[in-house]
Image 1 (cartoon, rainbow, N blue to C red):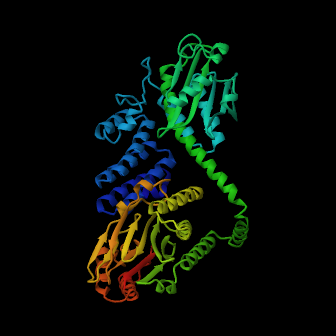
Image 2: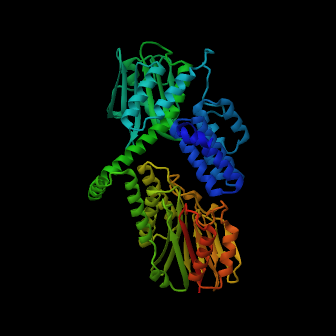
Length: 575
């Protein structure tokens, strides 16, 4: 599978990543497993393999549930359910609902009290839906991210497949409903993408639209002028429409839009089969609309920042003219990033000025830059220590590292003391920026606050070594203290804090995976046991001597082997 992924990554990379995630899971490599599950999910989504995206979500859900992390498991399980629903896998949805009734109760309740599946492949007349039409329609909508183009495509597909004469897509804009796209069949399907407040339009029954917005349920009228709740409405009386269908577009329980369709030539025009097909299109449309609106927001932010970045862009353009060779350009970029990474580290003088603590740090970038980050900040007696590692290598990883370093210092200077707000603010900034960069980078990040012999730790990273004065080591797992930074927009619910009391002579050792995963010429890994043993042996020495002892022993182990990942080490010891 690795060979297949090498020659046809569009078809096989996400499959290979999922297998690697499973291998990491059974090997106990939790951080690697989490990152690979996410990579498999993103890869399947990018290539439109919705069933494989669902499978990756499902495997990730079972992984987190096995770790007793129900909130994570439920999050991934619901996304798996959504993918399988969009694919039309009714038997799989039934199986998931029976296996996880408590975790999926909210999902199944939205489709009916009995937990019936909202997606079906059989119409009321016994004829099966055209599955190829369903798939093509969903893929066409899912592939569009530019809002105006999405609105045009959505209206064409909706009118064509629902059998409507005219259709309107209504979106919430600044708290009010507005017609954003109009489609009318006049020999051809003319689509107008323009914004008209619903209260100013005479083309739709406003009472029906407001009812759907308020109740988030559909209205289907087979003979609107003569039957149903709205026969006395002024619009219905004046226009005498025959068939009316108005349906909400919901994403995670939130109203993202409303579809309003009319057919004035025939009663009962919106058959059960067409309604079922429209359900599939609507489910994908709700997700795609939110994505397109987020993309437009990001574009607006880019425009706002264009003026500020003008000087920098000129310098980059001038540099690109000089660097004609791609290899030379990459080398220059990595060299600049490497220099930035080194220049942003705390200098020894800063570390020596922190009262009550001995601190020694070390960072050696790999050839391709791994995005390792550490910092030690002393702001008005408040000691903040950060350690993190960006996924992957190269310029993008280095850029994310620099952004985090800047954000941590900014929040500290602005006296942000709430650890949940602190980490979640950094996460939102990284999430938006990696989306803007169109990369899949994310980061493990742990933040430590020290005061009066008490260490408070939050955020998810490698294990933290708590070393007692005797050299005895306690390994603190941080998996329950946070969530990788940049994967989700809001991680506040996942952030917790651990508290450790340090006595004189006690301390902590922080590191990135470049140390335990360093390999020698024989392919053997340095490993955590060897690492802990060396730390313990040197603990009676100074923080600098401990750092030197660990790094020297690591170099002897690696030998002539190339260093493939950044090596970062921070030793903090209470005087």
